[in-house]
Length: 221
Image (tube, rainbow, N blue to C red; front, side, top):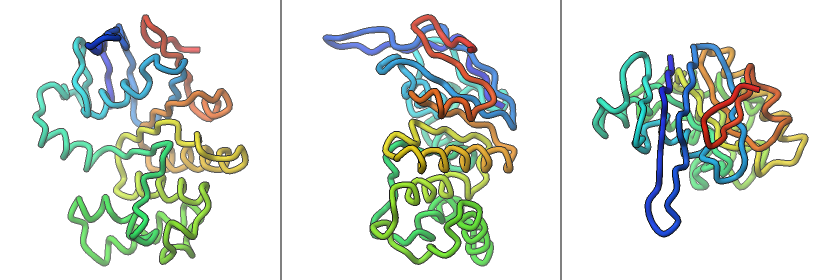
């Protein structure tokens, strides 16, 4: 599904440096991998390149055999909207929308109509253990519950690729363990591929494979 080939990225300016060099990864459907590495090594940059939010200086990212470099901004936006799901360290839950409305945003953007939208929202909330919280507002939820909302939102439109950037960084250990288990179970149940970026060795252990990002590329541990 996802092929990363000899990816490189540098940033210019007073502190110019090469952030990524020679990064390669093959990720088939159904596989969930973790990427670890020290701060500033380029883990979030790698996710941005995979999502087409940034362009590499060298190498390429292919999704289903098509190079992201061949797509214009509109096509990349459509690709992300239909086929990718994102979970961040900051929950990015909209405070003025209910839990159900937050989860339903990807379906709304993809033109899914009622009653299918309501059915899929209800099923996804049940899957993350929030079946009775659909009408709640984010301010009524704990941090762990808000991250579960974020997972439900990332998966409700059945994306083929899930990208998670430090999704447990703001959670206590118990909530983090619950969220990581849930994220893996949801990705696996949908047959999606997933990349988890994390500093945590415990979080990385929930993945099928663990890579370390270094200055010379990805190393399988």
